[in-house]
Structures are given as structure tokens and as C-alpha cells.
Image (cartoon, rainbow, N blue to C red; front, side, top):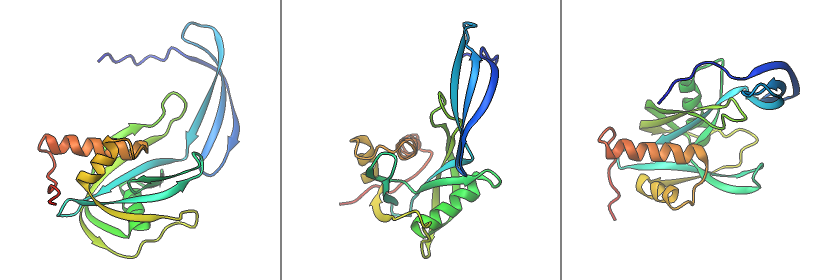
Length: 193
């Protein structure tokens, strides 16, 4: 894999066209790699994306169902949310897991960093597997109406593999965990029926 570190783009001007507490949108006048004038729009995120797969000793995990406003549909996904950049991704993962599922984990392992849509945004995600679980009351945010479901990891993997779960953080985390499992880097008890 080659590592080209020089930037072939020239930024002429940058203008912020929209800002909210979560994102800002910038318009850039540029010279493209061919040296021709053009424009580029960039969405900058004020927080990290965080995803967590909690797994108990029997191989069970928890997924979250909610209505996703931008897509106008209900989805099932791993516990996930935003992480304030003034803290660490781990702190955000710990908070999100309690907020959404009421789960406290003794052990968190970051298994993947992702660039979610690097052609248009600077959003970076951190995916965790969480183990050694205990339980408390969940504390969803006021803009979250969540359903939480306990499923075995093997069932979750099937939902991802057959396309029933399409959320990018969920797909990436589950496939990474399955790969770690197959390579002997992570042990998950199989589903016994």
C-alpha cells in the first residue's frame, strides 16, 4: 500500500455556511489535483462517533432500536452515539453504554477506528467491545426513544450477514469481532439451542 502524503489540492478560500452544536458545513474554493478551479463542500463533526458491542460470559449482547430521522425508518444497531472531543473515546463509550442500555463494563477494548465518509466529512468513529458487565438503570437522552433487545452474538452476526442490520458502525463492529473470533483473538461462547 503506497503512502502519498502530499496534498494535491490547493485551497483558495474557505467559508462556513452552516453551524450547529453537532456539525458545521464549509464551502471551499479549490484548485483540484489537475490544477483546475472547483469547489468542495466539507461537513465537520464536533464529536466522534462511538459504537460499543457489550458481550457477556454466555455470548449475549444488546442492540438498540430507534427511529432514525434522516432516513425516516426504524433501525436496530449496536449502542452508539457521539463523543465530545474534550474527553476521550473511551469515556464516551462508557457513558453511551450506560445511557442506552444501563450496562457498566469493567473492560473496554477499542477494536477499530473508522473514517465514516471521508470524501465529504471528517467524522471519525471508534468501535469498542465491552466485557465483564454489570447492570444499572439506563438514562437515554431526551431526543432518544429506545428499545433494547438482548440477542446472542451469533444471532447479531446473522442479522448483519443477511443485511437486516445496515447501520455502518454496527456492521463494521460485528464483522471485526467475528474476524477476531475466527483468528482466536476473542472468545465468545457459541449459541446453544
